[in-house]
Length: 277
Image (tube, rainbow, N blue to C red):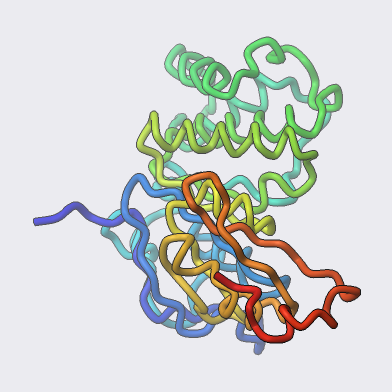
């Protein structure tokens, strides 16, 4: 019998009030995979993550986390299995880095919420893994954007999850910090056999780091598979509604995406559809 998938979604429909955001979405994520979710604004990416984290309830369909229907797990049990790093994290500037990271131990603590020796050990291991040990006594207001992002990832690691969900973890970072955060996620995923599901807007980062890509369009599944199968000229032009050049990067022959400015659109090569592979 094969191993249980980390996530399995079947005919998932999610909405707010009368508005349907996700419609009949089905996919699976094997344990230990790094999956990148992409799609235009409003395509349902953040809604999908919140549903996988148990924050939103499906209107219909089924979501299984580690072989069990998500509706059968308590909130505390979910927090021991799944950690979410939201796009807009609410953090109090008065807390130190260590205090913030220790917040991730809440699902494992008793009613009094006192930090045990085990909690401190896990927090220090999480800070070591994210290279923020030297920042542990600083307040959050003293951190750069890249440092704060690593603190939030360390807090999620402190939950000792099997699945980590991240909503655009590189969106507010400069190029160097984007690569550092992605390298960190790739290392954590490989070293700790952590299943990572992250939303990204940068298609080239998705191509470089994602083992598989999940492409959403207006709440429906437009593609799911390896980067070469999903990040095609036909898929991306249809979903994003703009002209793109998709060629081959010299790095592992992965797809490389370039947006074509309007001033080049009168070139025959682009109009003839030769912009793809």
